[in-house]
Image 1 (cartoon, rainbow, N blue to C red):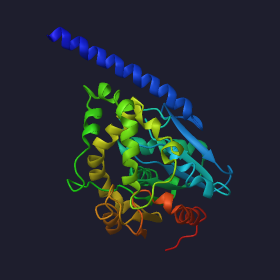
Image 2 (cartoon, helix red, strand yellow; image 1 turned 135 degrees about the horizontal axis):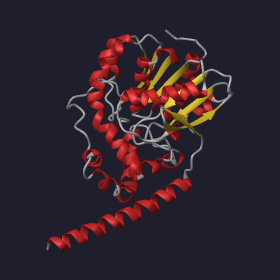
Image 3 (cartoon, rainbow, N blue to C red; image 1 turned 180 degrees about the horizontal axis):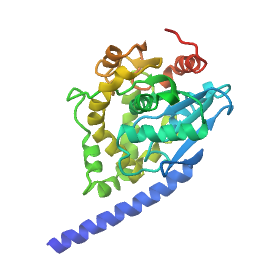
Length: 316
């Protein structure tokens, strides 16, 4: 009986691996790298660039379950005429290399810093961070204030939320597990696409989901097993990371603008943005009809704020 079970398990594992390999080949052909690979701290970082090289610099950091393509059709087209826009894949996402310890905010911020130093040497940037990317943007400003002139945070996750937003999603706990996580992640391409497409509307709600969002943002790249596992590791580590990082927010000394959808059910404004506001002065833009993706429905307002800060025109 044990032998039969082992044979069945081996067959299942082999089938999942073959399926995930086919999926990875297909999705990477559909969404190939669209930027340049730079070496930062010995690891490859994929960066997409737009706009004049000598223009003021804007660095964009994407959130969880995503990649830098998120900005190529939302914010970059509104800014690339007269700003240098750098859109970076976080470690293990898109086409950036994953490495040991990459699940810490310090390590991710260090990769962003290295990319900025290589592609815009000697210059500070307006740093834009969405959701998880907001936490990385804050860490970059804390650890490398010499590189950051201002922050624009979009529905950012900023603090340890305790049990108020629930625990880590079960699939992240499974995928991040050091023993069976690698195998479990092989299942992501099988069940993941349908599940993700069904769940996207909840991320945007109450705003409508843009047509072709899944395709335009290359979300299918997230379901490649290594990417899925990297995201799970990020998410399972995040609360602890934020509990430590949030104690330092009083050190921040740059202009900060935060866009917060009042109906965001993914990252509670009360548990995150409101607490950040108590620790450091911010310009808070509350969007009454937006959820977790303000740079889509309110892209013009977000781009306006980025432009003002990038050109040194503050509103507070």
